Image 1 (cartoon, helix red, strand yellow):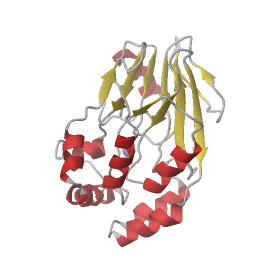
Image 2: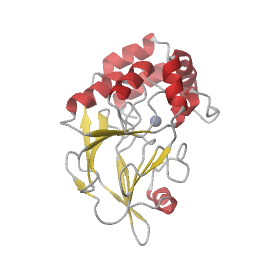
Image 3: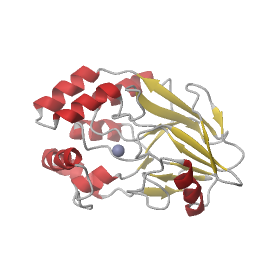
Image 4: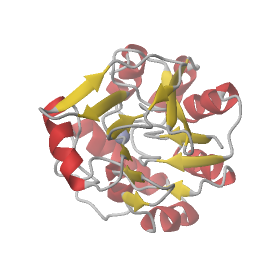
Length: 243
Ligand code: ZN
């Protein structure tokens, strides 16, 4: 069994299509949240993911902002403008779907917890370093927690003296069958690790094997749509640089 793990699509349809073209095959989809926000194609991305029939579809902070379940006071100005634009752009059906999403799921597969941000604060907290990762291990029971939100692919292992951050070797299965782990597949629609290519992961729940993959997409096409939609130009520029 192979599960396609997607996170932080952010209304970037070109990136989503590039990922779906690139994936060799999968039996299920788990989406870790933030389908909207920043990008120009919120409705089309929701339709595209809905057609994949994911068994797990989490809420992210941008999804909750779009449906008024979260204030945008803590968003940076561009993210706030994009959130308001998104709320206006979404269809009734899309809004209804987003309203029903939650940011944490237990039991997607045995031994697996899914969150958008962190297991401690599933909507908002960023697991960006080993110290937050170490604290995070105390807030879930399973051997593995998959998370998104940072837009940076990452792998942390629970250790006696703290969390150990492992480098990601792309396109190779990482063996997570022993120990406890926090893993982030990276972002489909707005990578922030200095590599502008889309990021996604494949997971085998029986073998507990995870692989992370990167794929280039037509950034210029998305940038043109962002500017045409009247979204902040910086949201277009950052896609070139992967931040
Ligand atoms: Zn995000």
